[in-house]
Image (cartoon, rainbow, N blue to C red; front, side, top):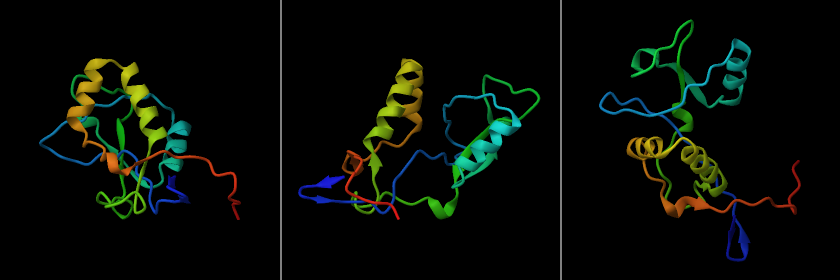
Length: 136
């Protein structure tokens, strides 16, 4: 992102994470996948541990398989940074989440908002593609 006249690359980019908390609930979406698709999820979500949450589901049952959630591995989870230079959340990522949530309806949005920490506005950056940078 640009901070005035200079380009800034945050040290970390933050994404959603789920943390176990017996006193709360989390809303979500179940995707039915086969073993090959699950393996692709595992490869893509390599900084997360896949955790079986089948026993914790309410109002739905899963047959012939398990329900999984990906939880950030401790070495990749960090507290909120003080500045976007230390860690940031891309606005385009939040826009994708917002569009998906709205498509699921007002009840989903309310449940999501109730079960999710608010995004610190100071850490949201307008991410841009820099054409003047070469990748080595």
